[in-house]
Amino acid sequence: MHNSLKMLLEKAEKNLERKKKETTHITGVILGCETQEEDETILIHHIRNLKRYVNEILVSIPEGKETIDEKLKIELRDFSIKLIERSLDSNPYSLKVFNQIIKHSVNDKLLILSNQYKMSKAQIKQIVSQDVPLVSFLGQNGNSLPFIASYDKWVNRFFLQILLINEKNSLYDLFRIVSDKLFYRIPAEESITYYKNDTNNSKQHSKKELYLTLRVQHDFNIQDLVKVIALMQVVKKEFSEDEKTHSTFKIQQLLTLSKKFANQGNCFLSYQIPYFFKCVRSEKIEFPVDWSQERIEKMGYDLLLEESELYKKKGLNRLFYQVLLDKIEYVKIEDSVLSKLKKDKVTIEELLRKDNIPFLE
Picture 1 (cartoon, rainbow, N blue to C red):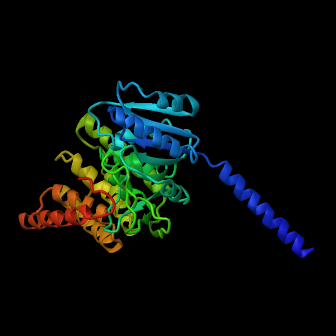
Picture 2 (picture 1 turned 60 degrees about the horizontal axis):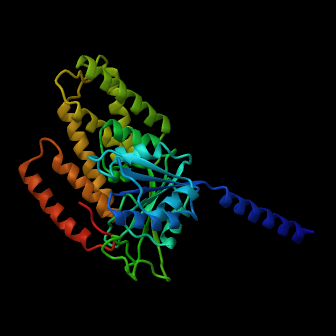
Picture 3 (picture 1 turned 90 degrees about the vertical axis):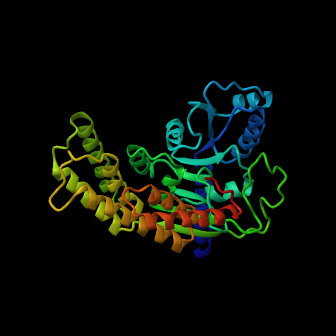
């Protein structure tokens, strides 16, 4: 009786697991498609690879692009594929383009690929296997590509929104701000390669792969993030209409929330608030007692320092590089510090170029 019940429960669990897998809906997103004819050939390959994992595919294409390849036309007819146009002057990997295309997704979970890079079926399977809001690959030297990932648009929607309010436009910033992310470190014998330059790379996927995982998690209250977004929108509107904020209380609330995020380890999320004031810098902003533009900007720079230490410790060198870029662009930085940062930038660029994931400036 006991054994029969145990077998019945095990069978039920297996059936539930199988049903869960069968009813998992994922949207495939292909970024970076250009106008050349060979891009369509590559696109066909990606579509065929994606079809076994997703129930719809969204493709970002340049405005006015017409489909020429007959095989691609057949694929477009036989599967749920939407071609989403982007303006010709836009960066194909910008946050704005990404935000535009995911609005068309019927699913929360997205599998994001670039039309310019090779991905093996095993690598695709690897990043969709984890139920984490953001999953991607990491090279041996800590490089990563932000347009090869599994992404949950519902869980991460407010992180994306705050970046858009601050007019940030890099997908790398999306990797920085998401509070729960996982990286698969690609073994040295594997690589992700640029499709047009290396179509016969035998080392793209090893049969004996061993993916080590690196997960970065920070606790935060979703209501705090919603409050930050609402306050930023109000302050920005007041500033654009009257060139003056009417409530120091709103400013104080934002600064308090920034400190709260920092205490939770969310350095880049916390940084978005001093960065916001840096962008709307004006003598007409009425700061709370003991606060000033200069103090807020120092707080922002200190947050960048803390964030960079986290990435150095974790070996996330591409994200560390992004922080370096922010530091270099930061206002009121001493010449001696700026000189050192530029030297660090050159050093880490050399390291990233030697990685088994291609480095993008």
